[in-house]
Length: 288
Image (cartoon, rainbow, N blue to C red; front, side):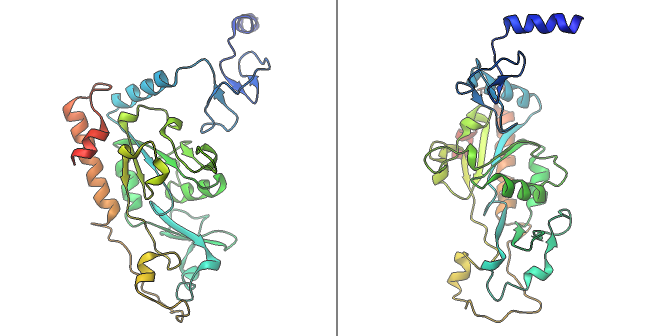
């Protein structure tokens, strides 16, 4: 009876602040969700109304600063991994399919092939150590222009236990502009002064270039690789039984160097002024 009484009261006073597919979550009244703030990165049909995004972002930052954490937004393709269709493999790379592990066993190895044998993926050297160590300093979010099913598969390879990203995966539908061309930090709850971005493309972050650490693009497979083209290797080169692929260094490659930079920024941020709004990662990044 008490629950029913409170429910009636809630319906009478409800401001319809959380619509889901045009139905308020609390009062079950039909409302327009068009005016809401999209929270579809948590649930595709969820939005919030009557809320100040700036205040929400500040609350998020206050919580994370209490944990001595900043925020890190990560791209997938050519930043953390390289993935292509098997049909695009060159003759010299086709034997890699025999060395790849099925995606259903993501904790084994760093070269994977999907269950249909259509896509092959190589994780960037040092990426597992990078994610583990960065997660102690940053709350991490994936932001990719890829479609959701593909993004979920790649995140599963990078984070098989779901401990680094949880539900924080932004995909093509979260991008803005015609043709979903741009990524935006307005989709990531938090103060922009506390958010860093890792991406191999600068042009997709037109409004947030100051937050960006631009990564050297990672190309492992020959197709589409500038390094491969510079070697003038033939697409008709014979396949090798035991190919020796050149790859980035685990110890001093791009991800290892980037982790060192992130540690330095994190250290300077909290050593200088840990108050909310007291420091700005964009300023620190520019100084380093």
